[in-house]
Image (cartoon, protein in one colour):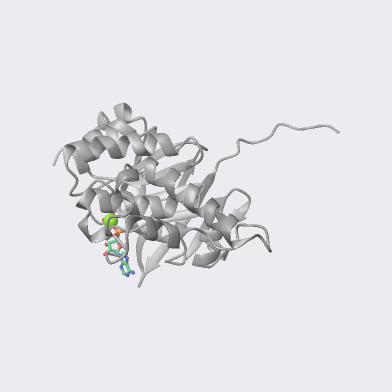
Length: 251
Ligand SMILES: Nc1ncnc2c1ncn2[C@@H]1O[C@H](COP(=O)(O)OP(=O)(O)O)[C@@H](O)[C@H]1O
Ligand SMILES: [Mg+2]
């Protein structure tokens, strides 16, 4: 069989995406493409439409028009829970961990159900889950905090726990809205290390304001302004773009 020239396969292809709120286009004919194993950062002034883009991808907000292709699936036609099943995990700005549960329990309840073979013995499942919880806990720097009540964690540790609760579901795309807001410098450095570790198996789409952090993690930066792309490319390119300096970085 003749194999023709294949177009490049992106993990995520957002094309001509638009959403109107009472006639106001918060996202306006937006197209961007995320590769496998990429860390993409979206930056831009307040109200640019950054959070709305994540809301559209995870199905919380329905698009007015346009498409969101994730692998071969059209996310704009799917419900929120189907999008999660398809492999998209999304962390919101406010943590949604269970304060009265331990770190272990928070991770355990996030483990996807029905993953093990039907009829598997309970103790086998328990061992599988325990191994996975420990593996994720190590990744999020909380291996020695497994028995601790989540409410006793620092702000940064709570953010990591929530990332862990998404990682345990093994998403192919992880979306984070301002993950290092309120973190200490050392926590920010460890978060950068964490993201660099987890992209071996997935891509990450991050909204962030902290330019030092963006510089540390971004493979590519997409600058949004009034629901459209103002600039896109390497951090080096974007931060020297006069348009970006004018509407965002110069302030
Ligand atoms: N559900 C909504 N209804 C009406 N307007 C909205 C809604 N969500 C967001 N917006 C508006 O869309 C614009 C973009 O918001 P947002 O995506 O939160 O920006 P950013 O995250 O870049 O600060 C803002 O003007 C905001 O007020
Ligand atoms: Mg926002």
